[in-house]
Image 1: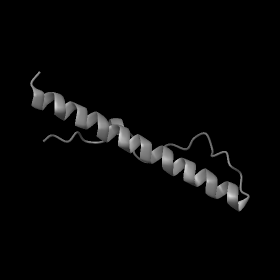
Image 2: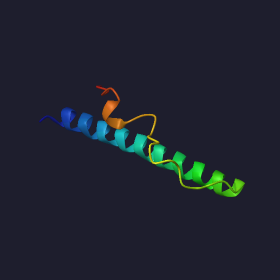
Image 3: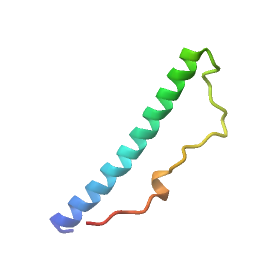
Length: 61
């Protein structure tokens, strides 16, 4: 594996991690908002993130 390929793979993993972090942050913010509004904090179990990192197209440099 060349240095460029290695860097590309690492960038892909970092982008996937960033998407996951954004999803978790959004879930936390939603939960905090619901809590502040006095709503039920537990979301329905059938709720899924809108984007799944596995479904995102891979970016290549």
